[in-house]
Image (cartoon, rainbow, N blue to C red; front, side):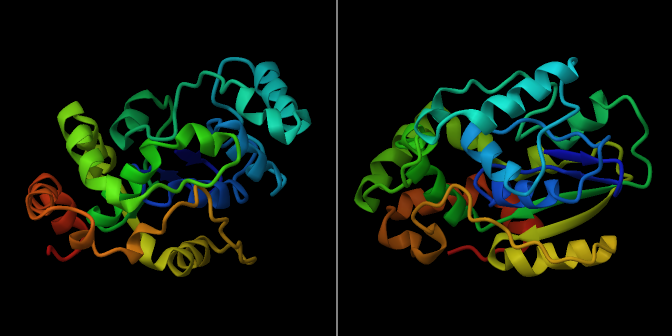
Amino acid sequence: MLLSIAHKFVFVRAVKVGGTSVEIGLSAICGPDDILPPMVALEERRRQALGVRSRNYGASPLLEAAYDTLVRETPDENLHRVPQPSSRFTAHTKLSEVIEHYPGSLDGFTAVCLARSPYARVLSALNMRDNYTDYTRGADMRTDPKTWAQAFDKELESGWLKKMFSPDVYGDPSGRMDRFVIHYEQLQDEFDAFLARLGVPDRIVLPHAKEGMMSNRFDPRDVLRPDQIATINAMFSDDFEAFGYARL
């Protein structure tokens, strides 16, 4: 999540849509008064490489600066030990919550959101769930696709898959915000188009954050059962319709 007063947009992201990469990229154009919530240390380090740091997310600028310094000076092998500071906004704060809690006016702002095929999102999430801790230590996120069907049953029973619904994140109760959608499948091109719309002259190459198994390359029918495909079709019906993805 980002809130840019300088460019009048709110960036919100659902789970497993390429949001970390876009958030890092958008951070590079944010102004000093914009809200950039903290990322986990490994990702915050990537943002620092662009000359940007998290800011305006808490009650103390001194504590924000201290987190920036800690991330910058901690050796790579110890980055996973750096605690992420508390923030009034988080990576996956819903648009409705931003509207509710931001004290200023958001009239004329654009809501920027990300879309991705629900099948690829689910597969990416199943791959990540087993090794996210290893990722924060610098390892690749790679699991055996043969384990995904079993992981699907586990996460369906736990209720975690329901937390991935995009409409819950992107819904605008005010009904007033213009919306700009960036599709994962055309991530760089549509990101470029958004910067052009803002009048940003320099191209920003998006980093590949949280690199995993590249789940868009998988046919979900090769790794999930037919009943699991049907479950995704039913659970994510709003996502399919809202963003124009075809069902299997």
